[in-house]
Amino acid sequence: MSTQISLENFEEIYNETYNKTLKYIVCKCFNLEDVKDLIQDTYVELYKILKKKKYIELDNYSNFIIGIAKKKIQKHYGIVYKIKTISIGNQSEDTYELTLPADLDLETELITKLNAEEVWKFIKRKDIKIVKVFYLYYCLDLKISQIAEELNMTESNVKNVLYRTIKDIKKNIKMEGDIDESKNGNG
Image 1 (cartoon, rainbow, N blue to C red):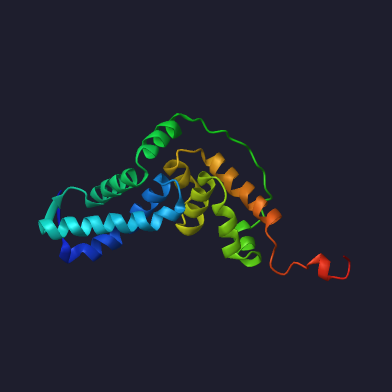
Image 2: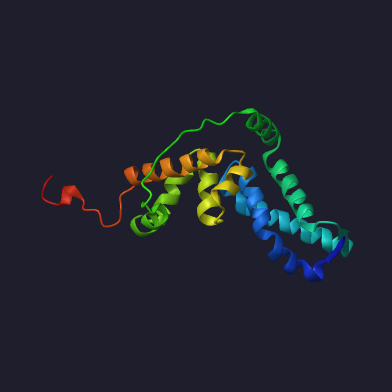
């Protein structure tokens, strides 16, 4: 069943497809700093196409927009994109088992004890895979199973990335309310 899209329903299409397109771009880019530009470029391109052609008849306009995003990513990264996507597909993922206490509410603990800006700065210095997992989990609210599927990882590996990085955050970033030992008269 084909749908006709035009400038008149651009905003509706944008609202319907934004999250899926954002998820795609986050999963495919090599630097999260590029995401805003790539998502903007994708929808600007769609706008230009609709302005030029007045309307387009498509079976699936969401896939059409993902196609635009794919081209924007390829253009942005050039040959690096092609090399990395080939090598990523051939890598095998190491999986680790990590047992955490069942009553540990990591998300609440992170939000209430850590400065979100400091955490984000810390995470952005990590490997891109870690950054993507955190962005998809905490910003886009994707489930671990969805993240695993999108990033070609096992669920166990996604959990491992989340839990080990949270442990690393807790170890390396000063918690709000922590007492500075040097100012406590002990140092």
